[in-house]
Image (tube, rainbow, N blue to C red):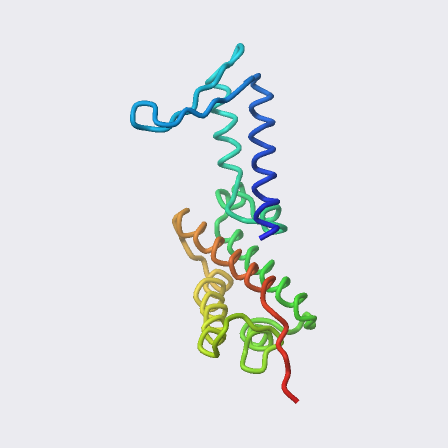
Length: 186
């Protein structure tokens, strides 16, 4: 959760920077104006076209990712080479999972996922055995369904599908971060 707040803080700081850059002195929230909420701005010498353009550039260069993934899988990469963006996010995921469990670099794919979240895996996520198996299946399913095709052949995806895949893998990384170490029964 802390990462989410840091990500939001960075976004808020960027919006404040843009507001300062375009000399916006104050923004006032006005609830219920014309049956809708509204924002009113007191603006000093504002070139609205440049502000809209700057905000548009900022939004376009923001991906739905957090942490390291946000720096390595940029909206520019998604736009220029969607296949490479998907390959990159899965490489980040696999590396992250491997580091999380202290696995060697030659452990990957299904074996890495099973060692992490399998029946005798070192991580656990979920309250019941069915939930725990579901997490392992989710990880393996995402890997087999989305990673493997992009690594072995050219796959054409629309931008919405690419962003959905990237967001899914970002979620897998977050699950990895919040998973508990398994308690081994002796």
